[in-house]
Length: 378
Ligand SMILES: Cc1ncc(COP(=O)(O)O)c(C=O)c1O
Image (tube, rainbow, N blue to C red; front, top):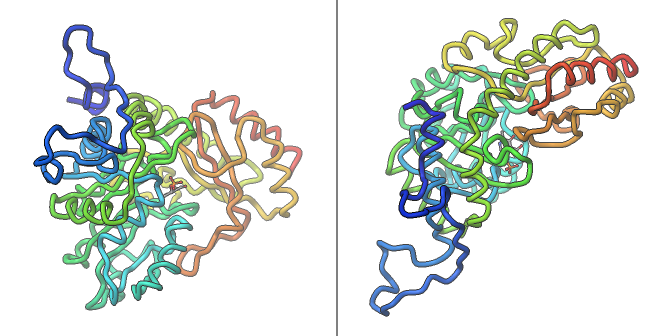
């Protein structure tokens, strides 16, 4: 069965006489039992924090998406990242974190893990087998994001796995929606989604998922989620399941728009370079072609030297790109990235960096919008 068919049908109620197409939302904190003897049973759901039928269906959808053995759901993408890390570390450990990781995940590593006596060391996302030099006896996890946030470096996961056989590899796989990249199949232990982006798809929901390759890792993550008390509402889970139904169709449109827009931008006068791994001139294009089956809706451009005022004027002049963080929704968005660029290794960015997230608008409208705003700004 093809994915598009799978996600149309999975996790639905069994047809009966007049059954609805979707499960109904069950809102609950307390769950009632008939007999006192059942209150402490571990084989049945005992409390609202432990989920609902819809949560089960969402977990199943993420396992199908990633080829995983188990999923833990979280109230945001960032909490999915922190949960995965906390499930893999203990006091005294050392972890390796890509220099291109999503900023708030980096702050968690630098501030929170430090308090736990876990040392987080950054590595160059393009180090490939060079990761070996950084691995210590107490290295317990490698935290990857491919392509990297803002700067779009592709990492060589198989090479990193070959150098780190016993270490938990965690990949933030938000960019590909799990559709064009399958890190678990390439040797990662955990794949993370900020489902806030494509899977929610409408910029109105915060949600995350941690998908594990093995059932033992899935249990470790689920236990940590329980200990931390992380829970998601059935209403949010319902919206995420609804998002899965149309995910593939939306994603393919947005992916196509992003690739075509990136190609077109690379020919525009005000652009120095476009950072999209599907473009042949991208430094990691070969690894991308080997490991990915497609792109995503998000990419960056480095403009020719320009003042802050010119960049602000360009962004303010856009009519169809919302000025805002996140991506994967139906509307296109844009940000300038320099204030949050925090790279210490490898990647050097020479000029103003602007990130585009493509929505579902007509591409000619998006091009015309960029053309008119660039003309007055640069
Ligand atoms: C790659 C990546 N991971 C994690 C997150 C965090 O997700 P959320 O905003 O749902 O906390 C984001 C948000 O922008 C992201 O881009």
